Length: 398
Ligand SMILES: Cc1cc2nc3c(=O)[nH]c(=O)nc-3n(C[C@H](O)[C@H](O)[C@H](O)COP(=O)(O)OP(=O)(O)OC[C@H]3O[C@@H](n4cnc5c(N)ncnc54)[C@H](O)[C@@H]3O)c2cc1C
Image (tube, rainbow, N blue to C red):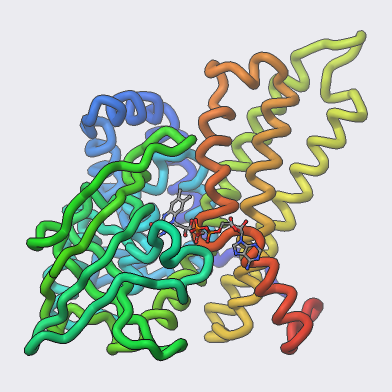
């Protein structure tokens, strides 16, 4: 395997790193404070600067304002952006918009691309992905899908109830998964729905253990007799489960990239305290039990990094079927890794770590959702074990 990053990409990585260090990290406190008051002034300036620096949506094709980097390039850059919770948004590379851009890029009709994809890539609008429903509807098992879409003349009529549609209140459009037949594999379809369409009702923002930040607000929505045209279908009718899966594999991986950046920053922040703080006659970093936490974190980040690159490489080679198992492994590992690194960072800092003088508590509350969103740990374990036991999973192969 060749771990060398091509020169052009490495220089781009250094530019993103410098932008994070010089612009985003000094401003993140202001962005978060303003966001609590419903303002975006500092974020808007950061976004203008990122655009002026040529670092806007680098993963996208050039005709949509990007640098055509593909998934390997995303791996290199998204880790840097993930070092701050506001970083991905500064470059217009945050979830759920970034995954939705990819989906529309490959599956939307030309009118839909012009109407929704172009302004989304330009950062003029935001979007949401609506698959999950309150019980007994679609959750870990999407086959429980209850939202329906039925043909009425040449329009589709959507009825249903969704929640955890991240960013759904502020979004301009929604990607809604609805049942279009009882076929177990081909019974779901994805529709583009105007957020302001008659019949779309925002019921509430679901309060969670994590503080709402930027796009990360969880909407509960009701759809009653919402009419959309035939061109609102993504891909084709009945392809919903397959397209959602196709969206989720790389989207899951981009989460892992961002989490790696945050975990790396958290462990890096520990260095200072472990050198400075003297306990029982020596710096904390010289105590074996503390060293174990540092080593565990360093190894877990390194392993997560390699898993992410490997899975991205499979995708870049067009080996999508194989990538699915590895993306489950990767998401499972990195979600747990992030929670463990943050928990250990709090522990190593003692009372300081538990205080809001350090960011670990806020980051942990955000990170905990990583083990649930985009499929809970247990479902990814099921996929990894099933593929290993019933299919060919080459663990040591390229
Ligand atoms: C912060 C956040 C953001 C989200 N954003 C979005 C979004 O933008 N769009 C969207 O559509 N959804 C979103 N989700 C929803 C997310 O995808 C679901 O929460 C997830 O798929 C699990 O579904 P559920 O919550 O209904 O859990 P349930 O299906 O009720 O499962 C509950 C628990 O049961 C266990 N379990 C389930 N199945 C199995 C199994 N086969 N084996 C063993 N144990 C099992 C797991 O421990 C699981 O956590 C988000 C969730 C969170 C927390």
